[in-house]
Image (cartoon, rainbow, N blue to C red; front, top):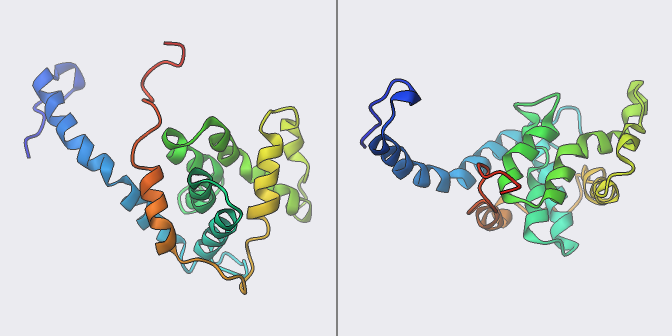
Length: 190
């Protein structure tokens, strides 16, 4: 594979960027596989919960799919805690950042804020304010995020639930992550 010849971007040429662009497309097409591989890192990590983090993610996605949610929502449900391994204190923002190019603004907001909304169910046991989510009460997607946590996330720790395996979701992940909705590098007002 040919590589760019610059040592600083200010020295780059059109030919350099053509070489880089030619390799970007195949790399980008492998994103779903990299994400699925990373999701598997949650397997066996119980963190004190009744089921491991992968089973929780699968159970959340299974509930969403069985409830008739669209593929994008199901992928959000599956990947909502993927940031646990790298962003222990801000896992929700990690998931939101990964999925931002591929999901609606509504689903992105839900992912980004689900951590504080989920806190409603346990923060008070840790000496924290369980109503921290109320800071967002006037936001147009407050109820949507509240429903995600109430209906799919907080109740997906059941060891007896008939959870679908990861393989059942792989085609959906590949479909949703096949191409970004829009370029991230174009200003919103242009």
